[in-house]
Length: 521
Image (tube, rainbow, N blue to C red; front, top):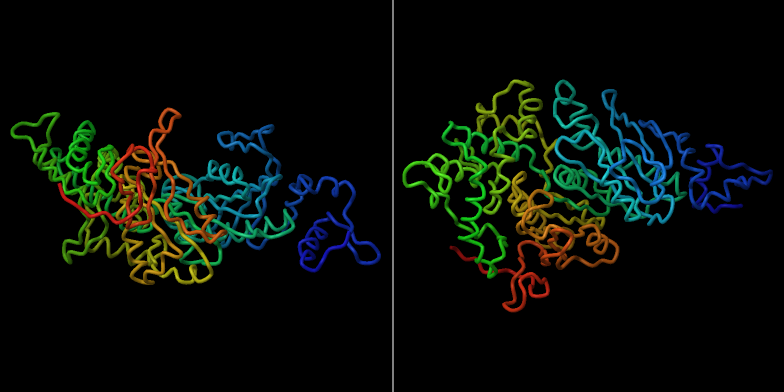
């Protein structure tokens, strides 16, 4: 068997690995047994162990599938056989980045997908790997360079913090592409990122710092302003723990939520238990203030002020500068995330282990002037993914679909609006040719809530990148008990879904995307 010049490098690699032999004429010959097995790639999986990659060591390469379930992937078993590769990446002497790459043995679509993490990461995203290979992608995930969901790994390890911030994702992408080419005999023709929360931030960071790594990015509810989100979470914790009277018991969350809906649900023309755009809702918690003693159907004066602060943006007390947007009206059922008995652990860890390097740091002492300035100076866009200059990514044809639930109680949806606005101001209105934001009414953090939280952003991104078809809207649904209760179009911000005035409000056919006139209760 003879290979053309384009195929020669990879088959030279296989020859070096011992899979191919040369005859006297200099042509390559494939052993008969390997030739028979090659289409399914099964004979090559274990052979990947012989690949040499700079700054990386392959740990395992083995076939897995429904017939051979391994304990660590038992909750995400691929439905068809894949070649599972695990590797350790060491870009620095203090790095220990673990990655997994799942390679479909049949039905590979010729593309690569990386899937993101959540929080402080520290684990492989097996459900994301499974979803990627189900779609036909060679799919990889990383633990971002440490084990466990705490930021304690960063204490005294600045290189590990850089690994977490951005280096692990970039290293994973480049090494995965090399392994893919060695396995299939050709490079992946396209590369996509798919992540939510910290995974959404990772996708934006890749587009900002390494514009050639991916052709398309799905960035859900991105924690792009890591410093700001941490500050806002502590702002909220201080509000409800200012004193014992300030704490809002979770039993009162439904009360607040019902009053918000009563005041603002109909503003979008449809009473459906969801606020299409909470920014139009001017509900004031003072409407619930108890006339006398505390009770289950009202808020005390201290609780009213705490609720107001949860909705409000955190502010620098000296300059008046807005630091980060507050929670939106409609998010009340999830307030335990920021307003529970303890502060959000992700935020607390950021200040304890990264900013102050003191595990005993007290959140009550955070200064929203000097301490936030210190955090931002330390970060220098290391973890933060706030760079608005996406031009290098866009210039090579890169596309971004960003989405965020309006009722997200963990990462304020206003953060996505703010980042989109910063890119618009930096690059102008032409960004709609490369970057679109979809706000999801009623959805919580990356899913859940009372809105239409089921949709397929990956397929929409594929259509944009591969068929040059920008998403004018994205179909979404809400299902409960296995039955679809509602369908609704998701519209590119600042458009919203507008009811046509007739037909069922649970049918997306009766809505159109457009700019609605705002109104007040």
